[in-house]
Amino acid sequence: MRHLSLVAGLITGLGMAPLAATAQTADPVLPLPVTDESFIELNPLSVALGRNLFYDPILSGNRNIACATCHHPAFGTSDGMSLSMGEGGVGLGPLRSANPANAPVARIPRNAPALFNLGATEFTVMFHDGRVQKQDGAPMGFRMPLGRALERPVRNALSAQAMLPVLSPDEMAGHPGENEIADAVADGLIRGDRGAWALLAARVGAIAEYRAAFDKVLGPGRPIHFSDIAMSIADFIAFEFRATNSPFDAYLGGDVTALDASAKRGMDLFYGQANCSSCHAGPFQTDQSFYAIAVPQFGPGKGSDHLFYGDSGREMVTGAPEDMYRFRTPSLRNVAATAPYGHDGAFATLDAMIRHHADPLRSLALYNYREARLHEMKVGIDDTLALNDLEELLRIAAASEIRPVSLSDADVADLVAFLQALTDPTPLRGRLGVPRSVPSGLALDTLPPT
Image (tube, rainbow, N blue to C red; front, side, top):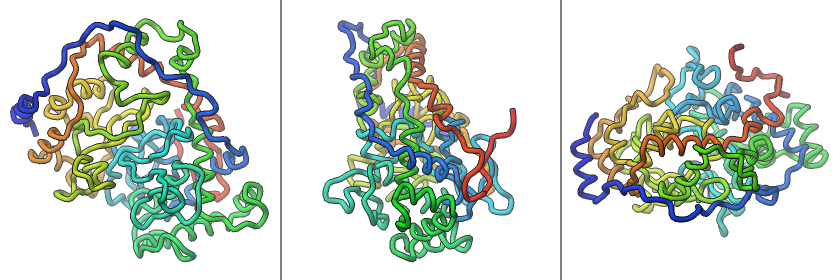
């Protein structure tokens, strides 16, 4: 798995020698402060309803997994793992384990992304590959994956995104023969009266407390569609996980004491010679675009034209060769709480992720699979197939779009300090918090007592 000499040769052939650091000659250009106008207006009744739905396993085919299982505030709205264990698991985060009676079939092939600030109006693209995107001319205004077109309008891309995890066999739906939702998905029945969305909406509507809550949000007696469920979940996420009160926000607001010396140096590097802001731009440190940055690939993969264990990223959505291995630029708000990093969670620390950005091809060549945080699985493919495939390794390296930059250990430490200064602690706790129970009466995934 050590192909350093070959990849090093490729680096030389591509002319990708690291750039020397240069002195700052001017103050960095910083983004404007975030304001309330950056976010959609929310209905408090919908937010409260969405909170229950977010934590309720009723939306999974086997009634055993909730949105919060892989997006829990205890783990920075993710699960603390490189690749999640979805359907068939028991428990939360690193302590989640396989249910002996219904073991997981496979890992989820990509890292569970954080949910901070997704209610902001600038977030019009969702998922690592952007397969949900606000788009003029698309049905209901959003491009969705094949066979998943929206049936009714939704408020924003976050609402459209919330329509999809319930349809994934390894995430929430379960597998054929296990339940009626999984069977409908397997038969291609997603939309319409017999589709998976309608079956889930009927489940929710049959619970008196949910029916009463939707009466207040939609109007008495109005039929519940799954888009209504998705919009309430999105409203809750937008409220609960808004992260706009960090030391960096205070600094942008005029408090020059909000950042310590190390974080200030890191900010100057981030918006200056380290070139981080060329992609991590704007108030949420993302340009909402897609780049190939040579993150090592492992796990089951999403599949591609040339191998089943690969992941060609954005290219799987657009079909464009130039999109091979491109993934969406993540927002960096509360990033210190969302490890591990990369589309598959390849890097366990901010230090390692920064060093990868500084010299992606060397990092790819030297990558140690033991950095990954993975649950023990009883079944599934060899997670290291892509790492042991030299041709795939070279394809990933050749696609890299980052030009290296020289960073000292002190520079890296200062960049970490700046990224830590993007932390707003309130959404890490949750504004409303985790409910003690949900209307379905189903058990919530919980952490062991400390």
